[in-house]
Every structure is written in structure tokens, then in C-alpha cells.
Amino acid sequence: MSGILAGLSDARLYSACVVVILYLTTCGYFLWPRRRAALIQPGSDKNASTTLIAFASQTGFAAELATRTAQSLQAAGTPVVLASLQEVDDAILRQSKSALFVLSTTGEGDAPDPAAAFVRDVLDSSVSLKDLSYGVLALGDREYDQYCAFGHRLDQWLRHQGATALFDVVEVDNGDEGALRHWQHQLSVLSNSPDLPDWEAPRYERWRLTARQLINPGSAGDACFHIELQPQAEANATWQAGDIAEIDPRNSTWDDKPETLPHREYSIASLPGDGAIHLLARQMRRPDGEPGLGSGWLTAGAKVGDDIALRVRANPNFHAPKGTAPLILIGNGTGIAGLRALLKTRIAAGNHRNWLIFGERHVAHDRFYGNEIDRWRESGQLERVDLVFSRDQSERRYVQHQVRDCAADLQRWVADGAAIYVCGSLQGMAPAVDAALTAVLGADTVENLAIAGRYRRDVY
Image (cartoon, rainbow, N blue to C red; front, side, top):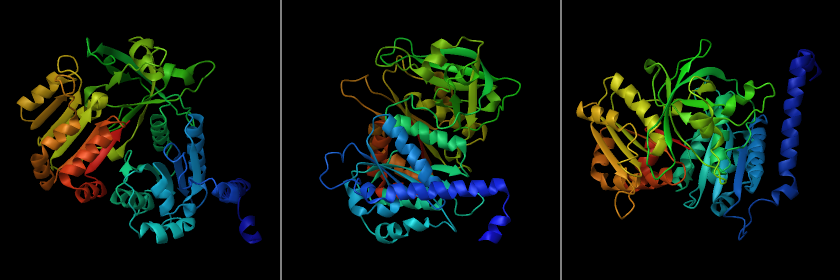
């Protein structure tokens, strides 16, 4: 041991010690008998509201991220219980209504050593988890063939047991900061706390607000604005359809006294060839009537011509599928932004077998990018469009109803190799569409589509 330590530089020795101390401290705390007693108990009144946060860690990093996750949710007023996966059994999963998993992958796609008993006793069994909603943060290294394999294995097992995925697996390549910020964004959505502070301050670039247009005047919903942002000289103006624009509200990190406000995420609605990042931002309102932090800044606070602090985050799980197979796009509200960019990519590549299912409130006010969609449909670049406006008839009608009504055609498109991309509301739309697809295609087909990367979601 002394020979090994002698070969390490002071910096490496310090780093190694920090990792070991962190791991031992975290494990000691969460494996302490009192902590184990805090796990969800049968018949507990807290079952419905408590979120289980389970981690599987080889070096301590997953444990650290799980701890930060717990702290963020607790700060938002969400009760949590935190445990190593080795403490979790099928009974605890059955009793849980909400769970978040932070999972490392080790070796050739294996689970971390402390999770071996869970893999043996739980993953090889069948458990009814129809009442469980969950999310997975998968840690890995793209240099390995089995990238994030354990996270995906657990995700597939949970789906197969009837659990509902709140969002697609968030993959983290070597501690990627952008992916971790996306996980934090999902936490803010789940806890209904958009002002949760970022764990680390992102490094923004300067873009200029060059255009802003209200596109739903008279709408029964909140005002929506089409926004265009052009890069300044030092900005990296490359992105793909599916990528995300992270906005710093009020350019807080550029102030003389930086506030480091939590970032806001917006689906990019354009391609680099358009010369600007296009966003579709809904002007959210706080309970006191004041505009939301991020949307208020973009839609009212900043002036046309002002600089905007922005960073593009790659979102490879929502990039356009390769090849010429059909694509079914489903979304609601401002989710049309991400779907618009995907359609632009498909059309530019000459792939015209595209089907859009989109929902909003009223056709007279909320037909976002309607003229563009009409042109694509009339030219044959968008083969099919089904628009659903919930309040244009006495009975409310949403995109999930259209999915069920189109069962035969959906089955035919999927049999032809179609991928399904969903973009829009995490609460309401996404689980309802997932349930509708399961009813139309069957649970096994939906699961296999997700495993093959043919069912992807960008929901918020």
C-alpha cells in the first residue's frame, strides 16, 4: 500500500482520499440502522407523498448525486427517503408511489458491487408496480461498449413491471455538467419549484435577442412568444434538432454581483441554417401574478437588441432518428418547438413520411406555426397532421384521445419501422399519451420501442 501511495502525486493522493472519505461517510450515514429504519414502511401515511431516492454507487459519485437530489427535493418541501439500492426490496418498491434512481455502471455493463443482492433478488423477479412513477439518472462512460447499461437495465425492468417512466433515462457521460443540469431541471418540474438553485453555475455565452412576437393573441391560455436569438462572435452556434437552450434569467452571472439564478430550459425550434435559435416561450405567472423568472425575462424583461446569456446543451436522446424510417411526432403546447426542429431536419434530409399529432386549446388562437405546417402538408413533406384543440367542443379532447382513435394507422406505421417522439408537458400529457400508446400497441411493443430507441420523450 505504501508503495502505491508513494507513486501518487500530492494532488492525486488528495483526490483519492477525498473520494474514499466521501464514499465511506455517505455509506456509513445511509446504512446506519436508524437510517435504515426510515425506509418506507407498510401502511405509512407518507407513502403517497414520499419520494424514494435509491442509489447504486461504486466509487461514491452516485451516492453524492443522490444526496444532492434529496437535498433539492427537501428544499422544495418534498418528503424523501434516501437509501442504497442494497436496502431496497420488492416490498419497498410496491409501497412506493414515486422513486428516483441514481445508478452507476461498472465493469462490462454490470451493477455496482453493493447492488448485487438487489440484482439477484429483485431484478430476476416479477413485481406488480403499476402505481409507481419513476425517473433514472444513469452514470457511465461512452468509451465503454455497455454505456450506462445498469441504468437502462433497471429502466427496462421497471417498465416491464408496469411502472410509469416520468421521463426518459438521463444519461451522464463522465459527470457531464449539462446532463446533470437537465436532471436538476426535471427535479424542479417534479417538485413544482422552478427556483431550485443549480448545483453548479453554468458558463454562458452571449447571444442577442433579435425578434420577439406574440403568436397567440386572444388565447385563453398564457401568452406565448416566438423568440429569435442570434449568436455573438464568441458563441458556439452549432446544434441539432432536439438540443436545448439553457437561459440565465436576467443574465445573473454577468452582473457585478452575480446572483447565479437557476437556469431555464427551452426546446430549440430551429436549425443552424435558420441563422438563429428560435424558442417558443409561454409567459408563466407566479401565484402573485408576477411573470415567472425565466419566461418573464425572455418575454418581457429583456428588450429586443439586448444580450442574452445562453448555453446550448446537447440532447442526443432526442436527436432525429437516422435513416428513412417513418417518424410519428406527438406533443402539446410549447412542445411544438422541439417537434418543429425535428420536422425541419427530416424535410432537409428528404424524409417525408412524417406524422404530427399536436394539441392546444383553440384553433382560432393556438395553432402554433400553423402556416408552416400547412405548407409542409400541402407539399407532401409532412404526410399526415392531426390537430386536437381541447376547448373547441363541449367535451374536452386531447392528443391522447387522438392516439387511441388512430389505433389502426399507428399500428401500421410502427410495423413499418416508425419511431415515436413525444414533446411537451410532463404532467398530464406525457403519461396520458404513454397509456394511450400502451393501449393501442401493447405494453410489450412500447417497451421494445423504448429499448430500441424508437420511443423517445422530451417532456418538462
